[in-house]
Amino acid sequence: MVILLCGLSGAGKTTLANSVKHKLEESGTNTEIIDGDEYRKMLFKELSFSKNDRFENIRRLGFIASKFSARGIVTIISAINPYAEIRNELKETYPNVKTVFVDCSVEKLIDRDTKGLYKRALLPEDHPDKLFNLTGINDQFDIPVAPDLYLNTGKMDINECTFLLFHFITNNN
Image 1 (cartoon, rainbow, N blue to C red):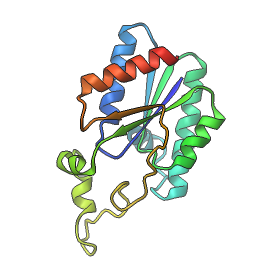
Image 2: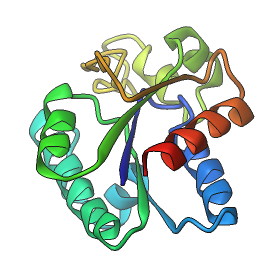
Image 3: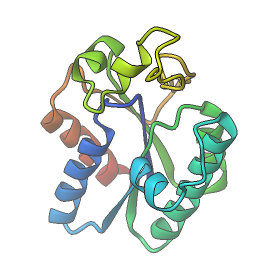
């Protein structure tokens, strides 16, 4: 099984992935996390944040996830994954891929701003530190129309989200 956690920066995808991995492994389920930020930093340094490179990034993550999944390892991809087209491509290419939309209001994400990205994206256009490609602010995010699971981290805490995702995985794996 491959779980595609998608959502805006700071929504809690990585926190949720780590929490669910811990719970799954306690129950005897082998689990691997493919964190988009980590893989981009270590393996895919040449990729920018253009639409084409974002597609390529997700294709690569999906390919790696499919290899783990083929070995019976529940694989969680934690990435913004903003485009419906590439999410659908992965679902059509590999077996047992499930989309989980990790939602949170932009207002709450601006308050959290764990990486300082929202602050930079909201700077004036001529500011030298302005971030121009922050998904959900000044770059596209296709909200999943019919995700396999919807989690709102702005309204539910990590324990509630972990519980729901854990049960979703164990019931669908």
